[in-house]
Figure (cartoon, rainbow over the protein chains, first blue to last red):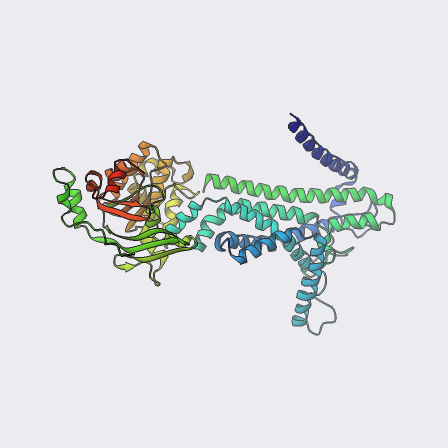
Length: 298
Length: 283
């Protein structure tokens, strides 16, 4: 009985904390969350509750998350397939890759930000500038931009996709692979036609986790692409972007008038939560449709 | 270790079961049939441990050969040598020679894909793909280059008929194979295997997970299939081996103890161990 009581209390405590956070954000943010606020630009006065808009930040955050998915899902899935289908589980290489993946998951996000700046901007971007724009006075690639921010986020969320994909690959009955191989399929054909379709819901779960994690992260994009203010939307992969999470930081630390800004600060937080929530719901719906399709099997 | 003499069917095999009417034709066909698979001195190692010990056996064309023996005796492992499914397991080493139709299937230039097209397999646990009934059969055909069209549909139908499943599924070809009963799923797996027209059909305890009625259907089907295919079946069920096979090989602890016409194995085995096993004294 005592066990049940303690576990119930712990569960209620978690629900309570969540309710307080969400309640607080909703209570303070909802009054200022208007259609005009969400769908107008930031060019009038970002700190004034009556003039500010956050569409550029919304677009920036959505773009970097979507761009990140294009990198992290293919690379993560292929890595998981290698680890689970091709690599010998006991070999040294496999063990090294596996522990690298696990350690990657434990690295603080600010370190990814610094890594992104050092590796993507200075090393990769710098090399590209030397190669493709040798005489240029202005750096083209060797500066923060949405591509570098997305790549940094992709590196950060890679373990989530790898682990989720691997879990779903492990759940596929070995008999299905055997059946395919016994019919004269190659390993690659078996992976493509039997294994991958089965693993799709798991892959999408990994994608959902990556998107939710990356959506709210600020540290990795601080040095790699987020802008305090931009007059225009990002138009190229090399452009910087405004970002919801970073904007929350800006609003809470840079405002000349704290009282004027507080309502939009909460409204921005609420928008960020809604955006991550929406992206999640979309991915969950897609996954559910695929699962249903698989059950109907055609 | 000396090489074990190859156990083959004596030419006068039919003479060993005298007076048993109905079994003589079976025995005669065993002696007359052409040798299709020839295994000589095959040993198999999982890492350091030896699972098969110098097995030499001839499998004859268009007959049912049953492998019997207690669990862990190596019969399934040996069966999987014929389509090289053991290749998939790490640290497996095969010694000796297996020839199918005169070609060494373990020589360097063998295309395993081609081999597996010629040597189909049905597994102990039915393993239909989570696709429609139609797609399950079409899978192997598509792998080997057949496009959508009347030919594909024709072969799917013919294969389902061949596996005695057509009448039960013809109205729901496009619904999930996972909705079929266990016995139907296993017959679907047989249909899938025969769709690509293999020469040999390996069956690894195909009925061990089925109820008696479904088992009876599979057995009936095997007797039908042997008109076209050479069948090698591993079974735990001695009555089953006696009912459906022409030849029976008894394995024990990785060795082939005795191989002979089924009626002889079950009525007048040559070895004490075989007799003890088939009479149920151990195993």
